[in-house]
Length: 185
Image 1: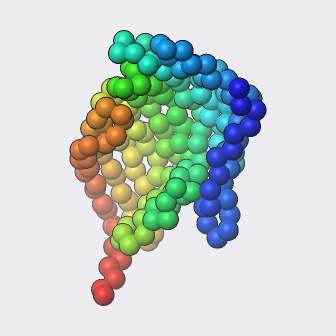
Image 2 (image 1 turned 135 degrees about the vertical axis):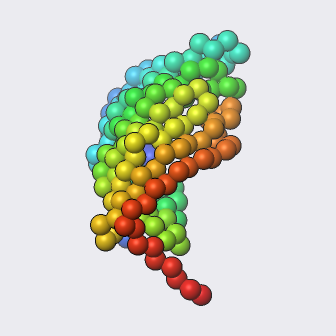
């Protein structure tokens, strides 16, 4: 039983982003499963509710749900080369077992921006959806603008191995009126 859990990290110029639980976190572990009582985590433009169970056995009886909104600036806490903005609205479940988890559901991306250090494209005001099937993450209908008025459309996704890790990628990017900044060294 945890009364307070904060996840925090630097995002830009001395700013920090923090997500904190609003209710006590009650974890119950048995030889068969780990149960998480429903708990909500909040932060700036973030409200995520998690709850359910994950099976420790081979029989796939897990159903851990994740619902709510995540401010994508939170992701900036984990890397200094990718900067994100916007909101991801999640409706997903983890099913299967701890040894072979599967993610099912959708993530709707709203007003998303992405900048990668030393990459010549910047995307802003992106909207679209990522659909998770038992072994894939599929980008559906994602469109964003670029500085100077260009437009990017992205389709594709990743094959997910057990453990929910991407092991193969395939993307189609359509660019219209997009300026690319190239820096010669």
